[in-house]
Amino acid sequence: MPAETKRKIGVAIAGCGQIARTRHAPEYQANPFAEIVGFFDMDPARAEALAAQYGGVAYDSFEALLADPRVEAVSVCTPNFLHGPHAIQALRAGKDVLCEKPMAATLEEAQRMIDAQRETGHVLMLGHNQRLVRTHIRAKELLESGAIGDILSIQTNFKHSGPESWSVERGGTWFFSKNKAAFGVLGDLGSHKFDLVRYLLGDEIQRIFATLQTLDKRDADGNLIDLDDNAICVFKMRSGIPGTMIVSWTDYGLEDNSTVVYGTKGTMKIFASELDDIVVDLRDGTSARHHVGRMSTNANQISSGIVDAFIETIQTGGTPPVTGLDGRNTLACLEAAKKSSETGTWVEVDLG
Image (cartoon, rainbow, N blue to C red; front, side, top):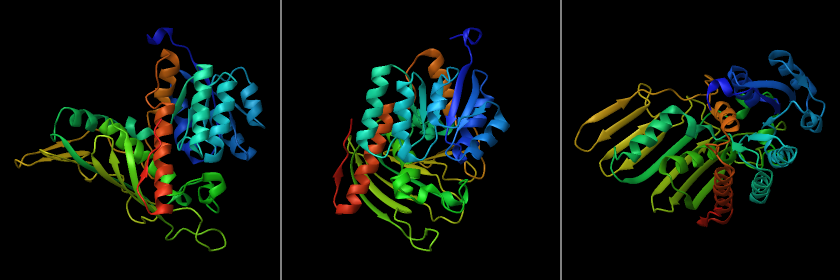
């Protein structure tokens, strides 16, 4: 759609935690075709603070947000257990929805979200932003061009010091509450990496063997939290390609968000070098370095591309780059990993 025919989309943000502050609000503000109408949070002061900074109103309830006819689209940035209910309410209220990850607390809830999207015809997009990172897009292009030959295996990591180091609730983050988060580090960081693997390989994860542990994170009383702060997963794609994923909230050094892909001609390292975004080392002794664009980190936030893609999808009426099915199948990986850790067995992923 030509820029001159586009109009501004009225958006509201539900949930005014750190992801809304560092990603959604500033990215909507920077988008010429988005207009922030208002904010809602269970803590009114947070909504009022963002409204004062970015404009718009602070709603006293989620229902009030949905009742505002100026709101055409909603970012759901509330705690995980509210993703499903809030997204479904918004869709049924005639709003387009951008929902943060993980998609929902259960697969059943995720399916209800997909059903609501199909029934209403409105946009449902998931905030799995790693597939929109320019370096990952370039890596996928290189893999598909045969840069390292046929893919043999993949390994991916995401490790940092934990949500309490950046959450607005430093003293008692909801990420440590099973009732609110449903998953620990597996859902927080693992959802990003499972989705990235699916994207890079253009394939679904079929089976998972996982170990989830709680090693160091503690609640306000000094007890270990009842959610995982480390997860190690071995998986197999539908195509037969094996892989590993390690995610951790107890990396108290530099953040690690790397991926390595092994092929018949060589190896591709993505964000595994301080100097280069992509390094391709081939078995014939040659190498190639690619400088595309760095990854956003908690300490250095850059535009995720998610908000721009969401607004573009609404404007064009196209399919979002991260669909409800993407969110559901990534959530199915989380549930399979959780079940595997509980049973000590390989678990089949319940793919949609």
